[in-house]
Amino acid sequence: MLNEFAKTVLVIVAGLFPIINPPATALVVLSMLPHLGDADRAELARRISINSFAILLASLSIGAYVLTFFGISIPVLRVAGGIVVAMAGWGLLQRPDDDDTAEPAPKPRSGATLRAKAFYPLTLPITVGPGAIAVAIALGTGTPRQGLQPVHLAGVGVALVLLSVSIYVCVRFAGHFERLLGTAGTQVAMRLFAFVIFCIGVQILWLGLAELIGSVKLDVSLNQR
Image (cartoon, rainbow, N blue to C red; front, side, top):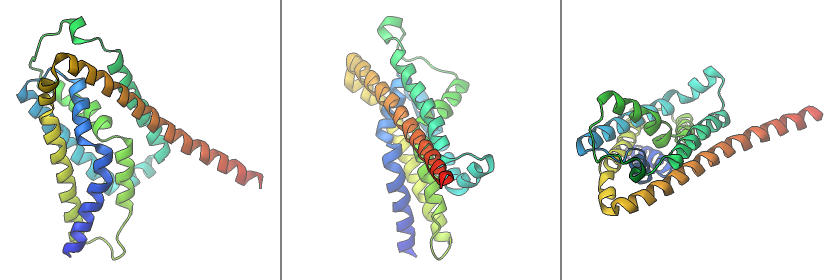
């Protein structure tokens, strides 16, 4: 029983942690919201981690059924998610520097603004994007041979908690990177990660398009036979 529990935890964490990449996510959040106080950043980290837990849990449990119900395929999900991620990265690349806009240092934000940004775009698709959702759906459809048991459900819960805690810790203390890098270093890091976000979006978009084109070619070849 303990072996099944550890196996479930390791499979989910090993499959999702590299895709979510909490340290990189924290730097992306820092680039999108650089001027946040400690209290606001802690609240933002808490909401992002809770939202991520809920999305991953839904993807693992009912994600495949939801996509089937709406007739959405994984390639289409990747195309749509890639477009959103690429647009977010492009918007960051085009945003003027703080020195140009003369924006003051940390200022409090309303709870409604933080809640809105915490879900979109910071949780979906920046933290839990189409890649993580696709992997979670694939893991959710891989039922153990002996069927689901309470130990498997406990392993899923522990794995998602570990992922959510890692997201919280990284986002919560992202401000320390800003103080460590300084103003100029922070601006360079923001531009760099904005370009990385744009490239990730284009890559996800291309993966989805490649799968769609491949399926169309397969259908055409089958019809010609």
